[in-house]
Length: 585
Ligand code: ADP
Image (cartoon, rainbow, N blue to C red; front, side, top):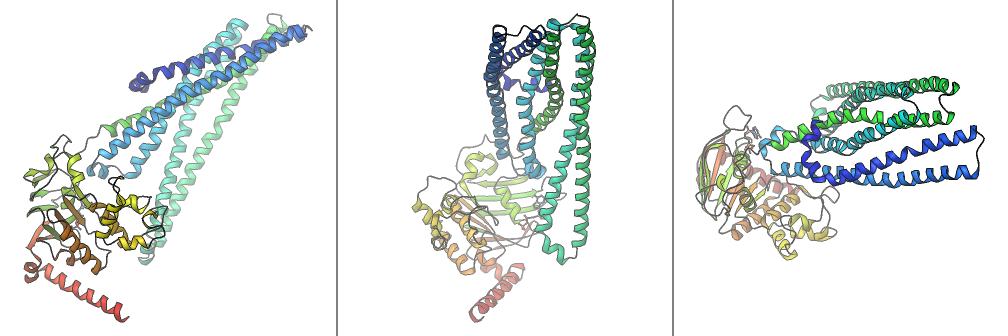
Protein backbone atom coordinates (compact mmCIF):
# COMPACT_ATOMS: atom_id res chain seq x y z
CA UNK A 1 0.00 0.00 0.00
CA UNK A 2 3.06 2.20 0.34
CA UNK A 3 2.87 2.85 -3.36
CA UNK A 4 -0.55 4.47 -3.08
CA UNK A 5 0.82 6.65 -0.34
CA UNK A 6 3.75 7.66 -2.52
CA UNK A 7 1.45 8.28 -5.45
CA UNK A 8 -0.79 10.52 -3.42
CA UNK A 9 0.29 13.57 -5.42
CA UNK A 10 -1.24 11.85 -8.41
CA UNK A 11 -4.37 10.69 -6.61
CA UNK A 12 -4.86 14.24 -5.38
CA UNK A 13 -4.62 15.38 -8.96
CA UNK A 14 -7.04 12.78 -10.29
CA UNK A 15 -9.32 11.97 -7.38
CA UNK A 16 -12.44 12.99 -9.27
CA UNK A 17 -11.83 10.48 -12.05
CA UNK A 18 -10.99 7.78 -9.57
CA UNK A 19 -14.11 8.54 -7.52
CA UNK A 20 -16.35 8.41 -10.59
CA UNK A 21 -14.69 5.19 -11.71
CA UNK A 22 -15.16 3.60 -8.31
CA UNK A 23 -18.78 4.73 -8.12
CA UNK A 24 -19.38 3.13 -11.51
CA UNK A 25 -17.72 -0.02 -10.21
CA UNK A 26 -20.02 0.07 -7.20
CA UNK A 27 -23.04 0.38 -9.49
CA UNK A 28 -21.88 -2.61 -11.55
CA UNK A 29 -21.51 -4.68 -8.39
CA UNK A 30 -24.95 -3.74 -7.08
CA UNK A 31 -26.65 -4.45 -10.39
CA UNK A 32 -24.70 -7.71 -10.55
CA UNK A 33 -26.55 -8.91 -7.47
CA UNK A 34 -29.88 -8.87 -9.30
CA UNK A 35 -29.63 -11.57 -12.03
CA UNK A 36 -28.74 -14.47 -9.67
CA UNK A 37 -31.75 -13.61 -7.49
CA UNK A 38 -33.97 -13.56 -10.57
CA UNK A 39 -32.55 -16.85 -11.82
CA UNK A 40 -33.28 -18.35 -8.40
CA UNK A 41 -36.83 -17.06 -8.55
CA UNK A 42 -37.20 -18.49 -12.02
CA UNK A 43 -36.02 -21.89 -10.79
CA UNK A 44 -38.48 -21.74 -7.90
CA UNK A 45 -41.30 -20.89 -10.29
CA UNK A 46 -40.43 -23.93 -12.35
CA UNK A 47 -40.28 -26.23 -9.35
CA UNK A 48 -43.60 -24.83 -8.11
CA UNK A 49 -45.02 -25.14 -11.65
CA UNK A 50 -46.06 -21.48 -11.39
CA UNK A 51 -44.43 -20.25 -14.58
CA UNK A 52 -46.64 -17.81 -16.52
CA UNK A 53 -46.40 -14.60 -18.51
CA UNK A 54 -47.33 -12.58 -15.45
CA UNK A 55 -44.72 -14.20 -13.18
CA UNK A 56 -41.97 -14.32 -15.84
CA UNK A 57 -42.41 -10.69 -17.02
CA UNK A 58 -40.88 -8.92 -13.99
CA UNK A 59 -37.95 -11.37 -13.97
CA UNK A 60 -37.10 -10.57 -17.57
CA UNK A 61 -37.47 -6.83 -16.97
CA UNK A 62 -35.15 -6.92 -13.96
CA UNK A 63 -32.52 -8.94 -15.78
CA UNK A 64 -32.71 -6.54 -18.72
CA UNK A 65 -32.33 -3.50 -16.45
CA UNK A 66 -29.37 -5.07 -14.65
CA UNK A 67 -27.63 -6.05 -17.90
CA UNK A 68 -28.07 -2.72 -19.69
CA UNK A 69 -27.16 -0.81 -16.52
CA UNK A 70 -24.01 -2.87 -16.04
CA UNK A 71 -23.06 -2.35 -19.65
CA UNK A 72 -23.24 1.43 -19.31
CA UNK A 73 -21.49 1.55 -15.96
CA UNK A 74 -18.72 -0.75 -17.19
CA UNK A 75 -18.06 1.74 -19.92
CA UNK A 76 -17.95 4.40 -17.19
CA UNK A 77 -15.33 2.70 -15.07
CA UNK A 78 -13.09 1.77 -17.96
CA UNK A 79 -13.25 5.34 -19.17
CA UNK A 80 -12.39 6.87 -15.82
CA UNK A 81 -9.93 4.36 -14.45
CA UNK A 82 -8.07 3.49 -17.66
CA UNK A 83 -8.04 7.15 -18.68
CA UNK A 84 -6.49 8.09 -15.36
CA UNK A 85 -3.83 5.43 -15.55
CA UNK A 86 -2.96 6.54 -19.07
CA UNK A 87 -2.47 10.07 -17.73
CA UNK A 88 -0.13 8.77 -15.04
CA UNK A 89 1.81 6.91 -17.68
CA UNK A 90 2.13 10.02 -19.82
CA UNK A 91 3.14 12.20 -16.89
CA UNK A 92 5.83 9.82 -15.72
CA UNK A 93 7.14 9.27 -19.23
CA UNK A 94 7.45 13.01 -19.78
CA UNK A 95 9.14 13.48 -16.42
CA UNK A 96 11.63 10.78 -17.16
CA UNK A 97 12.33 11.99 -20.68
CA UNK A 98 12.82 15.59 -19.50
CA UNK A 99 15.11 14.29 -16.83
CA UNK A 100 17.17 12.34 -19.34
CA UNK A 101 17.43 15.44 -21.50
CA UNK A 102 18.70 17.46 -18.55
CA UNK A 103 21.31 14.97 -17.54
CA UNK A 104 24.90 15.09 -18.64
CA UNK A 105 27.71 12.82 -19.69
CA UNK A 106 28.53 11.35 -16.24
CA UNK A 107 24.91 10.18 -15.91
CA UNK A 108 24.98 8.45 -19.28
CA UNK A 109 28.33 6.95 -18.52
CA UNK A 110 26.89 5.45 -15.33
CA UNK A 111 23.65 4.11 -16.83
CA UNK A 112 23.64 2.15 -20.03
CA UNK A 113 21.22 3.31 -22.71
CA UNK A 114 19.46 -0.05 -22.69
CA UNK A 115 18.74 0.27 -18.97
CA UNK A 116 17.48 3.81 -19.33
CA UNK A 117 15.12 2.62 -22.06
CA UNK A 118 13.98 -0.26 -19.87
CA UNK A 119 13.09 2.15 -17.06
CA UNK A 120 11.21 4.33 -19.50
CA UNK A 121 9.19 1.37 -20.81
CA UNK A 122 8.92 -1.56 -18.37
CA UNK A 123 8.95 0.38 -15.13
CA UNK A 124 6.44 2.91 -16.33
CA UNK A 125 4.20 0.17 -17.74
CA UNK A 126 4.32 -1.47 -14.35
CA UNK A 127 3.24 1.75 -12.64
CA UNK A 128 0.49 2.19 -15.15
CA UNK A 129 -0.70 -1.33 -14.36
CA UNK A 130 -1.04 -0.44 -10.70
CA UNK A 131 -2.82 2.83 -11.39
CA UNK A 132 -5.23 1.14 -13.82
CA UNK A 133 -5.60 -2.59 -13.40
CA UNK A 134 -4.44 -2.43 -9.78
CA UNK A 135 -7.06 0.08 -8.70
CA UNK A 136 -9.66 -1.89 -10.62
CA UNK A 137 -8.66 -5.21 -9.07
CA UNK A 138 -8.60 -3.78 -5.57
CA UNK A 139 -11.99 -2.10 -5.73
CA UNK A 140 -13.56 -4.90 -7.70
CA UNK A 141 -12.42 -7.31 -5.04
CA UNK A 142 -13.62 -5.08 -2.24
CA UNK A 143 -16.93 -4.03 -3.71
CA UNK A 144 -17.98 -7.12 -5.62
CA UNK A 145 -16.42 -9.44 -3.09
CA UNK A 146 -18.05 -7.84 -0.06
CA UNK A 147 -21.45 -7.28 -1.65
CA UNK A 148 -21.70 -10.78 -3.11
CA UNK A 149 -20.53 -12.45 0.09
CA UNK A 150 -22.99 -10.34 2.08
CA UNK A 151 -25.80 -11.21 -0.34
CA UNK A 152 -24.93 -14.90 -0.08
CA UNK A 153 -24.95 -14.80 3.70
CA UNK A 154 -28.07 -12.67 4.08
CA UNK A 155 -30.22 -13.87 1.17
CA UNK A 156 -29.18 -17.53 1.28
CA UNK A 157 -27.31 -19.01 4.24
CA UNK A 158 -24.35 -17.84 6.41
CA UNK A 159 -22.80 -21.26 7.11
CA UNK A 160 -22.99 -22.29 3.48
CA UNK A 161 -21.28 -18.98 2.63
CA UNK A 162 -18.36 -19.60 4.97
CA UNK A 163 -17.88 -23.10 3.57
CA UNK A 164 -17.89 -21.85 0.01
CA UNK A 165 -15.70 -18.80 0.51
CA UNK A 166 -12.81 -20.29 2.51
CA UNK A 167 -11.37 -22.27 -0.47
CA UNK A 168 -11.63 -19.10 -2.55
CA UNK A 169 -9.14 -17.38 -0.21
CA UNK A 170 -6.72 -20.02 -1.45
CA UNK A 171 -7.22 -18.60 -4.95
CA UNK A 172 -6.02 -15.22 -3.76
CA UNK A 173 -2.98 -16.81 -2.19
CA UNK A 174 -2.15 -18.83 -5.31
CA UNK A 175 -2.60 -15.79 -7.53
CA UNK A 176 -0.28 -13.76 -5.36
CA UNK A 177 2.46 -16.31 -4.79
CA UNK A 178 2.44 -18.34 -7.95
CA UNK A 179 1.44 -15.31 -10.03
CA UNK A 180 4.47 -13.47 -8.65
CA UNK A 181 6.86 -16.28 -9.49
CA UNK A 182 5.32 -16.65 -12.93
CA UNK A 183 5.77 -13.02 -13.84
CA UNK A 184 9.30 -13.04 -12.42
CA UNK A 185 10.04 -16.09 -14.57
CA UNK A 186 8.65 -14.43 -17.67
CA UNK A 187 10.68 -11.29 -16.95
CA UNK A 188 13.75 -13.50 -16.81
CA UNK A 189 12.79 -14.90 -20.21
CA UNK A 190 12.52 -11.36 -21.54
CA UNK A 191 15.94 -10.52 -20.14
CA UNK A 192 17.49 -13.57 -21.73
CA UNK A 193 15.83 -12.68 -24.97
CA UNK A 194 17.22 -9.16 -25.01
CA UNK A 195 20.66 -10.50 -24.13
CA UNK A 196 20.34 -12.86 -27.04
CA UNK A 197 19.34 -9.98 -29.25
CA UNK A 198 22.28 -7.88 -28.13
CA UNK A 199 24.56 -10.78 -28.75
CA UNK A 200 23.16 -11.34 -32.25
CA UNK A 201 23.54 -7.68 -33.06
CA UNK A 202 27.08 -7.58 -31.74
CA UNK A 203 28.10 -10.68 -33.65
CA UNK A 204 26.58 -9.42 -36.87
CA UNK A 205 28.22 -6.03 -36.54
CA UNK A 206 31.58 -7.53 -35.75
CA UNK A 207 31.31 -10.47 -38.11
CA UNK A 208 34.25 -9.45 -40.29
CA UNK A 209 36.50 -8.88 -37.31
CA UNK A 210 35.43 -12.15 -35.74
CA UNK A 211 36.22 -14.06 -38.90
CA UNK A 212 39.57 -12.45 -39.51
CA UNK A 213 40.83 -12.98 -35.99
CA UNK A 214 39.56 -16.56 -35.98
CA UNK A 215 37.16 -16.03 -33.07
CA UNK A 216 34.11 -17.19 -34.98
CA UNK A 217 34.03 -20.63 -33.30
CA UNK A 218 34.25 -19.12 -29.84
CA UNK A 219 31.54 -16.66 -30.70
CA UNK A 220 29.26 -19.47 -31.86
CA UNK A 221 29.85 -21.34 -28.61
CA UNK A 222 28.97 -18.22 -26.64
CA UNK A 223 25.84 -17.89 -28.73
CA UNK A 224 24.90 -21.50 -28.07
CA UNK A 225 25.22 -20.96 -24.30
CA UNK A 226 22.94 -17.96 -24.51
CA UNK A 227 20.35 -19.93 -26.51
CA UNK A 228 20.46 -22.77 -23.95
CA UNK A 229 20.00 -20.29 -21.09
CA UNK A 230 17.08 -18.77 -22.87
CA UNK A 231 15.43 -22.16 -23.48
CA UNK A 232 15.94 -23.13 -19.85
CA UNK A 233 14.35 -19.91 -18.65
CA UNK A 234 11.38 -20.37 -20.97
CA UNK A 235 10.84 -23.95 -19.80
CA UNK A 236 10.92 -22.85 -16.18
CA UNK A 237 8.37 -20.12 -16.83
CA UNK A 238 6.10 -22.46 -18.78
CA UNK A 239 6.27 -25.08 -16.02
CA UNK A 240 5.23 -22.57 -13.38
CA UNK A 241 2.56 -21.19 -15.67
CA UNK A 242 1.10 -24.62 -16.31
CA UNK A 243 0.61 -25.09 -12.55
CA UNK A 244 -1.55 -22.01 -12.32
CA UNK A 245 -4.82 -22.93 -14.04
CA UNK A 246 -5.11 -26.41 -12.49
CA UNK A 247 -4.54 -24.93 -9.01
CA UNK A 248 -7.32 -22.42 -9.54
CA UNK A 249 -9.63 -25.10 -10.98
CA UNK A 250 -9.02 -27.40 -8.00
CA UNK A 251 -9.74 -24.68 -5.44
CA UNK A 252 -12.87 -23.55 -7.29
CA UNK A 253 -13.88 -27.19 -7.55
CA UNK A 254 -13.55 -27.72 -3.77
CA UNK A 255 -15.71 -24.69 -3.17
CA UNK A 256 -18.41 -25.87 -5.57
CA UNK A 257 -18.39 -29.48 -4.40
CA UNK A 258 -18.75 -28.34 -0.77
CA UNK A 259 -21.60 -26.05 -1.75
CA UNK A 260 -23.44 -28.75 -3.66
CA UNK A 261 -23.09 -31.33 -0.88
CA UNK A 262 -24.10 -29.07 2.01
CA UNK A 263 -26.52 -27.00 -0.10
CA UNK A 264 -28.12 -30.19 -1.44
CA UNK A 265 -28.56 -31.39 2.13
CA UNK A 266 -30.24 -28.08 3.08
CA UNK A 267 -32.59 -28.30 0.09
CA UNK A 268 -33.36 -31.92 0.96
CA UNK A 269 -34.26 -31.02 4.53
CA UNK A 270 -36.35 -28.12 3.29
CA UNK A 271 -34.18 -25.48 4.95
CA UNK A 272 -33.39 -23.95 1.53
CA UNK A 273 -35.37 -23.65 -1.70
CA UNK A 274 -33.87 -24.98 -4.91
CA UNK A 275 -34.03 -21.44 -6.31
CA UNK A 276 -31.93 -20.09 -3.43
CA UNK A 277 -29.30 -22.76 -4.04
CA UNK A 278 -29.15 -21.80 -7.71
CA UNK A 279 -28.83 -18.12 -6.72
CA UNK A 280 -26.01 -19.10 -4.38
CA UNK A 281 -24.11 -21.07 -7.00
CA UNK A 282 -24.43 -18.23 -9.49
CA UNK A 283 -23.05 -15.81 -6.89
CA UNK A 284 -20.21 -18.18 -6.21
CA UNK A 285 -19.11 -18.15 -9.86
CA UNK A 286 -19.16 -14.36 -9.74
CA UNK A 287 -16.69 -14.46 -6.82
CA UNK A 288 -13.87 -16.36 -8.49
CA UNK A 289 -12.68 -13.39 -10.49
CA UNK A 290 -12.52 -10.84 -7.65
CA UNK A 291 -10.57 -13.26 -5.46
CA UNK A 292 -8.14 -13.95 -8.30
CA UNK A 293 -7.90 -10.22 -8.96
CA UNK A 294 -7.01 -9.54 -5.35
CA UNK A 295 -4.05 -11.90 -5.58
CA UNK A 296 -2.90 -10.29 -8.83
CA UNK A 297 -3.32 -6.92 -7.19
CA UNK A 298 -0.95 -7.67 -4.32
CA UNK A 299 1.65 -8.92 -6.67
CA UNK A 300 1.24 -6.01 -9.10
CA UNK A 301 1.56 -3.66 -6.20
CA UNK A 302 4.81 -5.22 -5.12
CA UNK A 303 6.29 -4.87 -8.57
CA UNK A 304 4.85 -1.38 -8.95
CA UNK A 305 6.58 -0.37 -5.76
CA UNK A 306 9.91 -1.64 -7.01
CA UNK A 307 9.38 0.13 -10.34
CA UNK A 308 8.46 3.40 -8.66
CA UNK A 309 11.51 3.09 -6.45
CA UNK A 310 13.77 2.69 -9.49
CA UNK A 311 12.17 5.62 -11.31
CA UNK A 312 12.35 7.98 -8.36
CA UNK A 313 15.98 7.09 -7.70
CA UNK A 314 16.74 7.92 -11.30
CA UNK A 315 14.74 11.16 -11.15
CA UNK A 316 16.55 12.19 -8.00
CA UNK A 317 19.94 12.14 -9.70
CA UNK A 318 21.29 15.59 -10.30
CA UNK A 319 23.55 16.55 -13.19
CA UNK A 320 27.15 16.45 -12.03
CA UNK A 321 27.84 19.59 -14.02
CA UNK A 322 27.05 22.76 -12.14
CA UNK A 323 23.51 24.04 -11.82
CA UNK A 324 21.67 25.99 -14.44
CA UNK A 325 21.17 29.21 -12.58
CA UNK A 326 24.12 30.92 -14.23
CA UNK A 327 24.66 34.07 -16.20
CA UNK A 328 22.11 34.55 -18.93
CA UNK A 329 24.66 36.02 -21.27
CA UNK A 330 25.79 34.83 -24.66
CA UNK A 331 29.40 33.62 -24.48
CA UNK A 332 31.07 35.93 -26.97
CA UNK A 333 34.65 37.12 -27.04
CA UNK A 334 38.13 35.79 -26.47
CA UNK A 335 38.55 32.21 -25.32
CA UNK A 336 41.07 31.59 -22.59
CA UNK A 337 41.94 28.00 -21.68
CA UNK A 338 43.92 27.48 -18.46
CA UNK A 339 43.39 23.89 -17.55
CA UNK A 340 45.52 22.40 -14.80
CA UNK A 341 44.12 18.88 -14.71
CA UNK A 342 41.04 16.97 -15.72
CA UNK A 343 40.26 13.37 -14.91
CA UNK A 344 37.23 11.37 -16.08
CA UNK A 345 35.02 10.33 -13.14
CA UNK A 346 36.00 6.67 -13.43
CA UNK A 347 39.58 7.12 -14.64
CA UNK A 348 42.62 6.42 -12.49
CA UNK A 349 44.86 9.17 -13.82
CA UNK A 350 44.55 12.63 -15.28
CA UNK A 351 43.41 12.72 -18.91
CA UNK A 352 44.43 16.33 -19.52
CA UNK A 353 47.23 18.27 -17.87
CA UNK A 354 48.43 21.85 -18.23
CA UNK A 355 46.58 22.89 -21.33
CA UNK A 356 46.84 26.63 -21.92
CA UNK A 357 45.71 28.62 -24.91
CA UNK A 358 44.29 32.00 -25.85
CA UNK A 359 42.07 32.34 -28.90
CA UNK A 360 40.97 35.78 -29.95
CA UNK A 361 37.47 36.05 -31.29
CA UNK A 362 37.64 35.54 -35.05
CA UNK A 363 40.61 33.19 -34.88
CA UNK A 364 40.88 29.46 -35.38
CA UNK A 365 42.45 27.06 -32.89
CA UNK A 366 43.69 23.73 -34.17
CA UNK A 367 43.85 20.61 -32.00
CA UNK A 368 45.93 17.75 -33.32
CA UNK A 369 47.79 14.73 -32.00
CA UNK A 370 47.64 10.94 -32.01
CA UNK A 371 44.42 9.02 -31.24
CA UNK A 372 43.67 9.15 -27.53
CA UNK A 373 45.87 12.17 -26.86
CA UNK A 374 43.00 14.23 -25.43
CA UNK A 375 41.58 16.38 -28.23
CA UNK A 376 37.98 15.22 -27.85
CA UNK A 377 38.25 15.43 -24.09
CA UNK A 378 39.07 19.12 -24.28
CA UNK A 379 36.09 19.58 -26.58
CA UNK A 380 33.83 17.81 -24.10
CA UNK A 381 34.90 20.26 -21.44
CA UNK A 382 34.11 23.15 -23.77
CA UNK A 383 30.69 21.58 -24.30
CA UNK A 384 30.18 21.47 -20.53
CA UNK A 385 29.77 17.72 -20.43
CA UNK A 386 32.07 17.64 -17.43
CA UNK A 387 32.49 20.54 -15.05
CA UNK A 388 34.84 19.02 -12.52
CA UNK A 389 38.36 20.09 -13.39
CA UNK A 390 41.16 22.14 -11.92
CA UNK A 391 41.87 25.41 -13.68
CA UNK A 392 39.47 27.34 -15.84
CA UNK A 393 38.14 27.88 -19.32
CA UNK A 394 36.92 31.44 -19.87
CA UNK A 395 35.04 33.17 -22.62
CA UNK A 396 35.01 36.95 -22.43
CA UNK A 397 36.80 36.55 -19.10
CA UNK A 398 33.88 34.65 -17.60
CA UNK A 399 34.37 31.04 -16.52
CA UNK A 400 32.23 28.93 -18.85
CA UNK A 401 30.84 27.16 -15.78
CA UNK A 402 29.30 30.46 -14.68
CA UNK A 403 27.17 30.79 -17.79
CA UNK A 404 23.66 29.46 -17.75
CA UNK A 405 23.77 26.24 -19.74
CA UNK A 406 20.61 27.22 -21.60
CA UNK A 407 22.27 30.33 -23.02
CA UNK A 408 25.75 28.87 -23.25
CA UNK A 409 25.13 25.71 -25.27
CA UNK A 410 22.94 27.20 -28.02
CA UNK A 411 25.76 29.65 -28.81
CA UNK A 412 28.07 26.77 -29.62
CA UNK A 413 27.96 25.00 -32.95
CA UNK A 414 29.28 21.51 -32.50
CA UNK A 415 29.95 19.10 -35.35
CA UNK A 416 31.06 15.64 -34.24
CA UNK A 417 32.77 13.17 -36.52
CA UNK A 418 29.80 10.86 -36.47
CA UNK A 419 26.71 12.92 -36.65
CA UNK A 420 23.11 12.03 -36.49
CA UNK A 421 20.57 12.30 -39.26
CA UNK A 422 16.98 12.61 -38.14
CA UNK A 423 14.37 10.70 -40.14
CA UNK A 424 13.01 13.69 -41.99
CA UNK A 425 13.87 15.80 -45.05
CA UNK A 426 17.26 17.29 -45.79
CA UNK A 427 15.66 20.70 -45.26
CA UNK A 428 14.43 19.91 -41.74
CA UNK A 429 17.70 18.24 -40.90
CA UNK A 430 19.63 21.39 -41.72
CA UNK A 431 17.28 23.80 -39.98
CA UNK A 432 16.94 21.50 -37.01
CA UNK A 433 17.75 24.25 -34.52
CA UNK A 434 14.74 26.25 -35.69
CA UNK A 435 12.12 25.01 -38.17
CA UNK A 436 11.15 28.61 -38.97
CA UNK A 437 14.42 29.35 -40.74
CA UNK A 438 13.74 30.19 -44.40
CA UNK A 439 14.63 27.94 -47.32
CA UNK A 440 16.97 30.68 -48.60
CA UNK A 441 19.03 30.58 -45.43
CA UNK A 442 19.09 26.80 -45.48
CA UNK A 443 20.40 26.91 -49.04
CA UNK A 444 23.01 29.47 -48.09
CA UNK A 445 24.26 27.28 -45.25
CA UNK A 446 24.29 24.28 -47.60
CA UNK A 447 26.37 26.28 -50.12
CA UNK A 448 28.83 27.22 -47.41
CA UNK A 449 29.15 23.59 -46.48
CA UNK A 450 29.65 22.69 -50.17
CA UNK A 451 26.54 20.55 -50.05
CA UNK A 452 24.05 22.46 -52.19
CA UNK A 453 24.98 20.77 -55.49
CA UNK A 454 24.77 17.33 -53.89
CA UNK A 455 21.31 18.13 -52.55
CA UNK A 456 20.11 19.32 -55.94
CA UNK A 457 21.09 15.93 -57.33
CA UNK A 458 18.94 14.07 -54.80
CA UNK A 459 15.55 12.79 -56.07
CA UNK A 460 13.49 15.43 -54.27
CA UNK A 461 16.14 18.07 -53.66
CA UNK A 462 15.79 19.65 -50.25
CA UNK A 463 12.62 17.64 -49.59
CA UNK A 464 14.40 14.30 -49.94
CA UNK A 465 13.79 12.10 -46.92
CA UNK A 466 16.95 10.89 -45.21
CA UNK A 467 17.81 8.94 -42.08
CA UNK A 468 16.48 5.54 -41.08
CA UNK A 469 13.51 5.59 -43.39
CA UNK A 470 14.94 7.69 -46.19
CA UNK A 471 17.81 7.41 -48.60
CA UNK A 472 21.25 7.14 -47.11
CA UNK A 473 23.82 9.85 -47.65
CA UNK A 474 27.53 9.20 -47.97
CA UNK A 475 29.77 9.80 -44.96
CA UNK A 476 31.10 13.00 -46.55
CA UNK A 477 27.60 14.25 -47.34
CA UNK A 478 26.50 13.57 -43.77
CA UNK A 479 29.47 15.51 -42.44
CA UNK A 480 28.75 18.45 -44.69
CA UNK A 481 25.10 18.37 -43.70
CA UNK A 482 26.14 18.54 -40.05
CA UNK A 483 28.36 21.52 -40.83
CA UNK A 484 25.47 23.27 -42.56
CA UNK A 485 23.29 22.48 -39.52
CA UNK A 486 25.84 24.11 -37.24
CA UNK A 487 26.52 27.09 -39.50
CA UNK A 488 22.87 28.03 -39.83
CA UNK A 489 22.74 29.25 -36.24
CA UNK A 490 25.82 31.39 -36.90
CA UNK A 491 27.42 30.18 -33.68
CA UNK A 492 29.81 32.36 -31.70
CA UNK A 493 31.99 29.32 -31.28
CA UNK A 494 32.13 26.58 -33.88
CA UNK A 495 33.71 23.27 -32.94
CA UNK A 496 34.59 20.77 -35.65
CA UNK A 497 35.61 17.46 -34.09
CA UNK A 498 37.24 15.59 -36.95
CA UNK A 499 34.20 16.71 -38.90
CA UNK A 500 35.86 16.80 -42.31
CA UNK A 501 37.46 13.37 -42.22
CA UNK A 502 35.22 11.91 -44.93
CA UNK A 503 35.34 14.96 -47.20
CA UNK A 504 37.85 15.02 -50.08
CA UNK A 505 40.85 17.36 -49.83
CA UNK A 506 39.59 19.87 -52.38
CA UNK A 507 36.18 20.23 -50.77
CA UNK A 508 37.81 20.47 -47.37
CA UNK A 509 39.85 23.47 -48.50
CA UNK A 510 36.76 25.03 -50.05
CA UNK A 511 34.87 24.73 -46.75
CA UNK A 512 37.81 26.01 -44.69
CA UNK A 513 38.21 29.06 -46.88
CA UNK A 514 34.50 29.75 -46.56
CA UNK A 515 34.72 29.44 -42.77
CA UNK A 516 37.64 31.82 -42.76
CA UNK A 517 35.71 34.41 -44.79
CA UNK A 518 32.34 34.07 -43.13
CA UNK A 519 33.47 33.90 -39.54
CA UNK A 520 35.71 36.96 -39.29
CA UNK A 521 34.62 37.86 -35.74
CA UNK A 522 33.82 34.38 -34.48
CA UNK A 523 35.90 31.62 -32.99
CA UNK A 524 36.44 28.26 -34.67
CA UNK A 525 38.03 25.20 -33.08
CA UNK A 526 39.12 22.38 -35.32
CA UNK A 527 40.20 19.02 -33.95
CA UNK A 528 41.48 16.87 -36.76
CA UNK A 529 43.62 13.97 -37.83
CA UNK A 530 44.21 15.49 -41.25
CA UNK A 531 46.65 18.34 -40.71
CA UNK A 532 45.66 20.16 -43.90
CA UNK A 533 42.57 21.28 -41.95
CA UNK A 534 44.61 23.43 -39.57
CA UNK A 535 47.06 25.00 -42.02
CA UNK A 536 45.17 28.31 -41.76
CA UNK A 537 44.72 28.17 -37.95
CA UNK A 538 46.10 31.06 -35.91
CA UNK A 539 47.49 28.50 -33.49
CA UNK A 540 47.53 24.73 -33.30
CA UNK A 541 48.12 22.66 -30.18
CA UNK A 542 49.81 19.31 -30.64
CA UNK A 543 48.61 16.93 -27.93
CA UNK A 544 50.37 13.89 -26.64
CA UNK A 545 49.21 11.89 -23.64
CA UNK A 546 46.92 14.68 -22.51
CA UNK A 547 49.59 17.38 -22.62
CA UNK A 548 50.43 20.04 -25.15
CA UNK A 549 53.74 18.87 -26.61
CA UNK A 550 54.13 21.58 -29.22
CA UNK A 551 52.23 24.64 -30.40
CA UNK A 552 52.31 27.35 -33.02
CA UNK A 553 51.18 28.21 -36.52
CA UNK A 554 51.52 25.73 -39.35
CA UNK A 555 54.84 27.22 -40.45
CA UNK A 556 56.19 27.22 -36.87
CA UNK A 557 55.30 23.58 -36.43
CA UNK A 558 56.56 22.50 -39.81
CA UNK A 559 59.99 23.86 -38.91
CA UNK A 560 60.23 21.87 -35.73
CA UNK A 561 61.28 18.30 -36.25
CA UNK A 562 58.38 16.82 -34.37
CA UNK A 563 55.21 14.78 -34.71
CA UNK A 564 53.48 17.54 -36.67
CA UNK A 565 56.15 17.91 -39.33
CA UNK A 566 56.52 14.16 -39.80
CA UNK A 567 52.76 13.63 -39.95
CA UNK A 568 52.24 16.49 -42.38
CA UNK A 569 54.90 15.18 -44.75
CA UNK A 570 53.44 11.68 -44.63
CA UNK A 571 49.91 12.96 -45.28
CA UNK A 572 51.06 15.16 -48.18
CA UNK A 573 52.75 12.17 -49.73
CA UNK A 574 49.76 9.88 -49.47
CA UNK A 575 47.52 12.66 -50.76
CA UNK A 576 49.74 13.00 -53.81
CA UNK A 577 49.76 9.25 -54.40
CA UNK A 578 45.98 9.20 -54.19
CA UNK A 579 45.75 11.97 -56.75
CA UNK A 580 48.06 10.16 -59.11
CA UNK A 581 46.04 6.99 -58.77
CA UNK A 582 42.86 8.92 -59.60
CA UNK A 583 44.33 10.77 -62.58
CA UNK A 584 46.25 7.86 -64.07
CA UNK A 585 44.29 4.93 -62.82
P1 ADP B 1 41.41 11.98 -28.93
O1 ADP B 1 40.22 12.81 -29.16
O2 ADP B 1 42.67 12.76 -29.01
O3 ADP B 1 41.49 10.76 -29.79
P2 ADP B 1 40.25 11.47 -26.36
O4 ADP B 1 40.11 12.81 -25.77
O5 ADP B 1 39.07 10.84 -26.94
O6 ADP B 1 41.42 11.47 -27.43
O7 ADP B 1 40.85 10.48 -25.28
C1 ADP B 1 41.85 10.83 -24.34
C2 ADP B 1 41.95 9.73 -23.31
O8 ADP B 1 40.81 9.74 -22.47
C3 ADP B 1 42.07 8.35 -23.89
O9 ADP B 1 43.01 7.63 -23.14
C4 ADP B 1 40.70 7.78 -23.73
O10 ADP B 1 40.76 6.38 -23.54
C5 ADP B 1 40.21 8.45 -22.46
N1 ADP B 1 38.74 8.64 -22.47
C6 ADP B 1 38.00 9.18 -23.46
N2 ADP B 1 36.69 9.25 -23.13
C7 ADP B 1 36.61 8.74 -21.89
C8 ADP B 1 35.51 8.53 -20.97
N3 ADP B 1 34.26 8.89 -21.29
N4 ADP B 1 35.79 7.98 -19.78
C9 ADP B 1 37.06 7.62 -19.45
N5 ADP B 1 38.12 7.79 -20.25
C10 ADP B 1 37.91 8.34 -21.46
